[in-house]
Amino acid sequence: MRALLLSTLLVAGCVSAQFNSTTGKSYAPLTSHAVILSADEAQQIAPQGQVIGTISAASLVRDGVWGTADNEDLAAKAAKIAAQHGGTHIVATSFDSTIATWTTPATVTRQCSHDDGDYSCEKTYTPESTGSATFPTAEFTVYRVAAAAWAALPPELRPGR
Image (tube, rainbow, N blue to C red; front, side, top):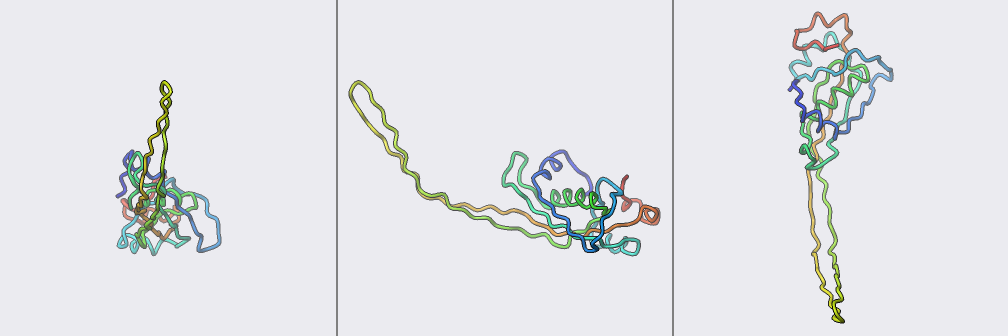
């Protein structure tokens, strides 16, 4: 889950992520991307860390050039946003989805031509259609572990600089 492929980075650009502070404080960034943790890993860093906020993330596109964003894309975007707000670690608290539906109204088009005095028109009727798409959403808890405490963490849970 920590590996980021080029396609993940491109799709992650189609993800919205909003940081919500739980402390009311601003923190300087310590890393460029927060470490994405499992629930078990979050318990390991909790003694050294402080919860500083939450992130709500959602996919913005459906069937884009690089596909629809998935849960890993949401986590990658959340990791970047968390780091910008001073977070060093994130853990997903929920993955869900929003379903968007739409109706395209029926249309009639008319194409006419005039050829040597003959005038003709052709009508094309396109019936009403409906569609729907599922957009993944996720919520994350953001932790901040002071840089001085990183050495006490298992190597795989230490943020990069």
